[in-house]
Each structure stands twice: as C-alpha cells, then as structure tokens.
Length: 306
Image (cartoon, rainbow, N blue to C red; front, side):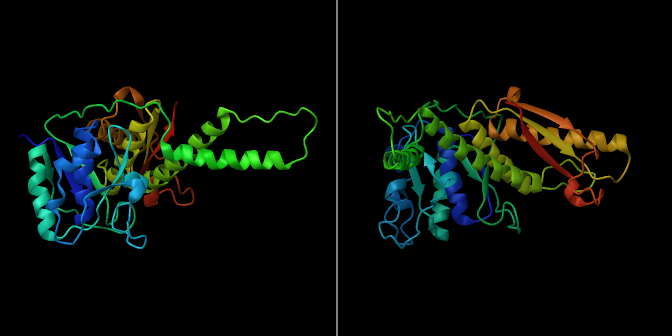
C-alpha cells in the first residue's frame, strides 16, 4: 500500500498516539472494535499493559495510574461518537512493532523531531498527507457531545435549585431554555479558540523568511482540528513583519507568511480554501510597538470572519 499519512513526533509515546489519530483520519467511521482489531493489544505487551484502548469514561482502573492519554484533544473520536483513550506506555520493541504494523494502513513515521522549549515541546505530534491524499470527511453528528450535556446538567440543576430556593410570587412559572445549552457550548468553543490563538500568535518567523516554524505547524494542526469540528468557522490569516528593511519588501513578506499558514491548513489540515483568507500588513501593526524591530513582530494572527 502506498503510504498516505506521515506522522511527525517529538516523543515515542506521542508518536504512537499520532499513529492512532492518523488511522482515525483515514477511517473516520471506525468503531472502538475496529481500532482494537487494527491495533491488537498484543502489539504492546512489554510494559505489562493489558489494553491499548479504553473508553474515556473507563480510564485508569487504578485511580492513581495515569496510564492513558486523557486530555480532550488526545482522545480518539470513534465513528459512533465514542471517546477512546490510548495507552501511554510504549517500550522501544513495542513501538517498533507498532510502526511496522501501521504501514499496512498507509501510515509511516518520520524521524523524531527535536524537542524544544515552548510551543510544540516534547509530546506533540502532527500529520502530513502524502501523494495528494485527501482524507474522507467524517459524517458530522449534529448532536451535542455527551460531556457538554454533563456540564449542562450541572448548570441546569444549579439554576433550578437556586430558583426553587428564592421566594416566588403567586402562579410564578420557572422555565429553563436552550439558551443554557448554547451558552455552555459557546464557552467551551471560545476557550479552545483562545488557547490556540495565543499559541499561534506566539509562533515567530525568522527574519526575512516566510517558512513556517515547527512550532507554528503544531499549532496549525490543532487549529485544523478545531475548524473540522466547527464547519461554519471561517478565518482570515493576517501576516506581519518587523520594521527591518524596505516597506514594499515587508508587505510582500507579510502576505507570504499569511499564505504559508493558509496553504498548510488546506494541504495538511484538509480545510476548504473557501473558509480561509490571507492578508498581509507589512510592519504597520507591530505587536511590540516600543521596539518595531523586535522578533515578536514577525508573526501571523487569525481573525474570525464568520
């Protein structure tokens, strides 16, 4: 099989996690049974782990054992909406078996990238689509995830208790509307977006260059995942430069930086080009106005346009 997805990682166990995410990108309707058959438990017996996958709600049969990836963006989302956690513990022999095994699904592993301080530090991974491969689109489930409903339930119960405990006038009717649900959904979405935005804005360019740094690529990978979760989201990517050099050159450089981010989201994140715009501002809008030549002024930012 011609390889279709390449996994880049900065740590062995997170690269293993990247392999599982690559499989779900290629087979978005797969169930937990499917992925367990694709990557059977016997691939990883060296650390004494019994399972490669558990349902997110079943993580850690021993409450003190943090043996599975647990963050929301680390979990696999199955075709039926089930959230699945991947085991963290991979010895070198087990990892090598996994890498060899993954090739049958069109997944290859790049050489480990160097881990650096800051964004994209040890533990990150990203995916690259090869040979013009375009991953299939997951059938979007318009329903609200179970964990959002759990938060909503807590909020609604709290509102009801508060309302019931206050003095009520005669024949007063207490109602709870869908506004509560939407508020919770919006809050979770905004928090995700703000975190990605902060990391994205902090990723800098080398002087006179429009090439994306590895830190920027890792953040763009997260941004692509968010955009795939919210198909209505459209963004304008804005490029900026520091004040060194000619203004005309800086304008073109800022446009190239914005376009580099847009191209990455399209080619490596599977985002429709119609959802993205690229704009350059040269050195006219420095992040550090006190020092127009400061490195932090060489950046890209994004603005929601819908």
